[in-house]
Image (cartoon, rainbow, N blue to C red; front, top):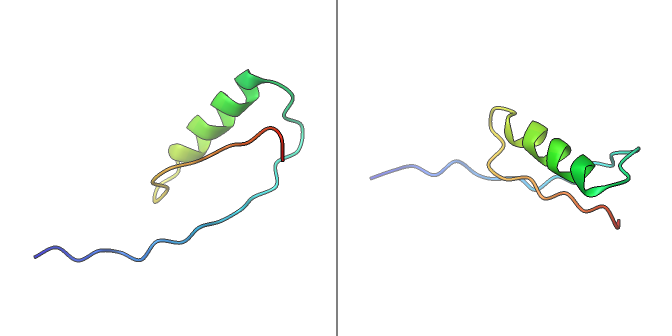
Length: 45
Protein backbone atom coordinates (compact mmCIF):
# COMPACT_ATOMS: atom_id res chain seq x y z
CA UNK A 1 0.00 0.00 0.00
CA UNK A 2 1.40 3.39 -0.96
CA UNK A 3 0.82 6.59 0.95
CA UNK A 4 0.00 9.66 -1.11
CA UNK A 5 1.44 12.98 -0.09
CA UNK A 6 -1.11 15.81 -0.13
CA UNK A 7 -0.67 18.19 -3.05
CA UNK A 8 -0.99 21.94 -3.03
CA UNK A 9 -1.76 24.27 -5.92
CA UNK A 10 0.12 27.56 -5.98
CA UNK A 11 -0.18 30.63 -8.18
CA UNK A 12 3.01 32.65 -8.51
CA UNK A 13 3.17 36.00 -10.31
CA UNK A 14 6.25 36.18 -12.54
CA UNK A 15 7.10 39.47 -14.21
CA UNK A 16 9.13 40.02 -17.36
CA UNK A 17 7.88 37.17 -19.55
CA UNK A 18 7.30 38.26 -23.14
CA UNK A 19 7.59 35.23 -25.41
CA UNK A 20 7.16 31.47 -25.77
CA UNK A 21 10.82 30.90 -24.89
CA UNK A 22 10.18 32.58 -21.51
CA UNK A 23 7.36 30.13 -20.83
CA UNK A 24 9.60 27.16 -21.61
CA UNK A 25 12.47 28.42 -19.45
CA UNK A 26 10.24 29.26 -16.48
CA UNK A 27 8.29 25.99 -16.60
CA UNK A 28 11.51 23.93 -16.81
CA UNK A 29 13.05 25.88 -13.93
CA UNK A 30 9.96 25.32 -11.78
CA UNK A 31 9.80 21.61 -12.60
CA UNK A 32 13.46 21.27 -11.54
CA UNK A 33 12.52 22.39 -8.01
CA UNK A 34 12.34 19.47 -5.58
CA UNK A 35 8.72 18.65 -4.76
CA UNK A 36 7.22 20.27 -7.85
CA UNK A 37 5.27 17.69 -9.85
CA UNK A 38 4.07 19.91 -12.70
CA UNK A 39 4.28 23.55 -13.67
CA UNK A 40 1.81 25.36 -15.90
CA UNK A 41 2.93 28.74 -17.17
CA UNK A 42 0.53 31.12 -18.91
CA UNK A 43 1.81 34.22 -20.69
CA UNK A 44 -1.68 35.73 -21.02
CA UNK A 45 -2.47 36.11 -17.32
